[in-house]
Amino acid sequence: MFESLSDRLGNVFDSLRGRGALKEDEVRAAMREVRIALLEADVALPVVRRFIDKVTEAAIGQEVLRSVTPGQQVVKIVNDALVEMLGGEDGAAQAKLDLEAKPPVIVMMVGLQGSGKTTSTAKIAKRLKETEGKKVLMASLDVNRPAAQEQLAVLGEQAGVATLPIIAGQQPVEIANRAMQAAKLQSFDVLMLDTAGRLHVDEALMAEMKAVAAVATPKEVLLVVDALTGQDAVNVAQSFTGEVPLTGVVLTRMDGDARGGAALSMRAVTGKPIKFAGTGEKLDAIEPFVPSRVANRILG
Ligand code: GDP
Image (tube, rainbow, N blue to C red; front, side, top):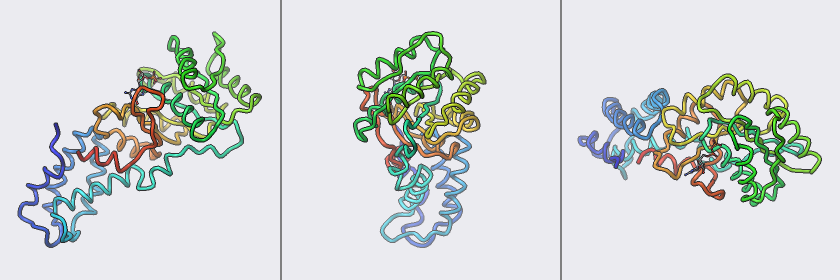
């Protein structure tokens, strides 16, 4: 469907055959192709601009290695810069949740409605239980969407993870307090709070989220974003970043045909590591985020 960046760059460097340094005009011509590739991968425009500036500067004047063509060399420079921007080679280490605190350690999930927040809450809880032997309690603070709390209870049953019993009429902060008390009394290691999502970022949602964060003082605050959000990812990231102390990002629907550009945008805007990638609807469909894999996907 897409022409790969290596193919695109073949033409730009026709004249220069594996010798000498990368010249400014060639690098700039190459960067026009890189720009198109990034936009096609749905990286947000301001992030594309920043990235191109950085890479242009790094590339001009670089000696071309004997073993590669200039086009391949530029692809490598771009690829390395992408991997670095996405979290570096040790991305897997950063992907781990920081649960070093007195239990129950609180993990708060935030994001827009439909991003996959509730599903990701259950996926991460199941993973913590199965791979780290943690005793996890989940609580839904979503009192706006009908049946949101029930949805988490159903997922909890499927995942074999406990959920806080539902009491009709309670408000998010009350539920958070009750969940914290229950988690303490019943010696849970981790408490996951699934906050309400809205269709759009709005002030009431932000105020509610801040109130919950203030009482729960979560160790991790994960922003859940749909990888198919593309250009919109920047707006979502920006509005959440200013309001709650994010510690990481969960990128869902990486099983779809998203080219992965949202990953770069999220990372650039939040400055926080992408910790997990959601790869399907099933509760096992979540993996630690691997920067190099996503860089390949963005470059096509
Ligand atoms: P929320 O409104 O943000 O809590 O979203 P939900 O967790 O209810 O998810 C909305 C829909 O997206 C559900 O049908 C999920 O099964 C689906 N979903 C969530 N994560 C993924 C993912 O990584 N891949 C795919 N294909 N579907 C997902």
